[in-house]
Length: 586
Image 1 (cartoon, rainbow, N blue to C red):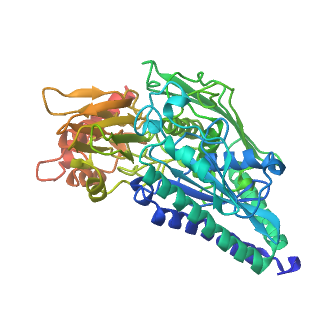
Image 2 (image 1 turned 90 degrees about the vertical axis):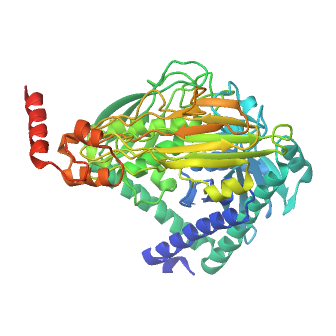
């Protein structure tokens, strides 16, 4: 197709074709993977970049993964000539400081795409490998390491495949430093298959249109996303908006760690939004630090969610967005800070951004959500369990309520988007049994719109096993907004409902569970939005009937008097709410 024939319809067709290719890459990766973390939980992402490393399209997978893929691409394209790339090459990396990653278990691969002997694009994918070495099984996802080397093997960008031939010496070196090598190899080969699929479809697309036409379409798409975001920014008043929140602790020290943001929205001829994290505390001893790629991905997600949820995220979308964060602070940590639990901090960054924008546009944001990624890791070894394995799962919680809707119950929010691991799949592959799994009544913050309910999951060890985790909001609850109440905090409890029960820290590793022990995982609830006494009485009744709130919660938090039969005492309810209003007026 010649350039003069390119129009907006053709551009949209090309855009959807590119998006479809990225989605197909993700589907192939999920189907071909060995680990439950990818084949069941879909802890992976795919993207397409142009020849200069600019993001073209991103599959709808895991928002935090964009940082790692974009970080590696930019690392490579800065010194592109030195790589001397050929068709069939693949580069691998996971290092947050040398390879553009965000934590070591997220292993990123990129493959250059050639059309008529010219480099025209890159395809990329990322998969969370459940073990990458380190001091104990799955510790790369725990939150209490004190340096990066404790979390696993660092892989700086290196060619793992040359002209479609795997470099066995490099692959062997990587796998020898990891547990359960068969599964690691299976996931790696699935990533390679995904990249090859993307290459085949991209070459077909370029053959149909030619590289000049597609380059023109991509340029139009970049400009479109930029204009759409700028238009959305104009709908919010110019100004500078602040917000501060804190992490419970860093997994080593018990003191809270402050995160602060100052957001400046500017209009004029070229609207922009600037994020300044200069009020954030320094990087910590524990593993909750964020490398720059994680901060970038988190801010991009927040902007899309708040201002332009229907606008494609690409290089043009990023043009109006500017980020400043001092080197060495919690959200821009420097080598060799541990980063295994960085998603807890990413979630808190979203909360502070929501809090700041909520001061000028409350209708665009949600109250604080579960606020952390409750990541649990059960690790088996040959000595303890009879074989090496690592089971990883991120468990959802309560989403914060908005100005017109209750928060969703028991979901992963914001920068994470993995599935739960089905009980059947978990019990089939691991010596574990789920003895309880459900929502926690009264766990969401009360409000005109209720915060989402958290989850309780009780898991019993059938053999001796090691438990590790990273989470937050175990001490500082998710805040409510515009008068809404706080959500309930999360908690880890070993052998609950017994005389020997023990509270386990939110960031931990290597807790030994004996055969028969039960670990109770309780996530946090979402914050409420607006005064609870303004909540529709029918909604309170519905929540009670569905078991989401108790009689006491209805009375104390919402001012609704319910009878045991599920009927509302209207007179008593009106009197109770009237008394509350009079007290406020006094």
